[in-house]
Image 1: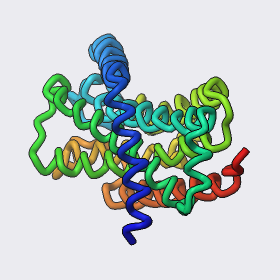
Image 2: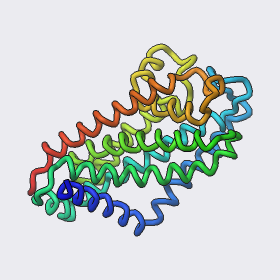
Image 3: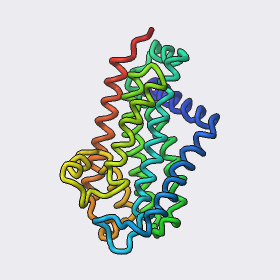
Image 4: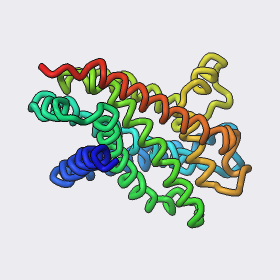
Length: 262
């Protein structure tokens, strides 16, 4: 077991060290969503009340779980750019010729991106008073658990794309095409209630919708009315866990198919 865990932890540690040497990534990952949340939330707070939410829920409060999801999404996905960089610099080829199973390589990469996303998502929890929400320690702990699942699933989604790419430009182009739509159509920006039927079903089929719903349920833990008209916590957690499992399998399968040493 040790011979498998050591490579996984080594790859995980390398991702963390790389991040600590690029501290500007932390500032950009927190500052951009924070500005986006405050500006957009404040601008719409007085004129827009999301449908399917209790009376008195302002937009800046509604938008808060969605902006946490955005922090996790950007951090988790763009942490996987390291795969493209490692291939270009030759490090990945060195890992691939080592007696390390592909699932171990992917697991180390996934845990590295998950850790970075989780840490930055937890930092964003300090802004919960600005949203005007009172949370308990149980709410915070349950949100951290959901953030871990979301981060792991999103990191694996990034790995599925990154293992196929040879350039960071191509990676950015494809991920921007995928990321923004799945985030907007997750209930983070607006709820499923009151939208056209085609858009509503698209949102219901989006796995990220259930991750956002789980975050919102945990934020209002024990108060189902305040959470609004969204999927129940059990269903949301189950689908989010399934999303993690399937994306990890997809990332491992992609690594096996695209791990030819050149």
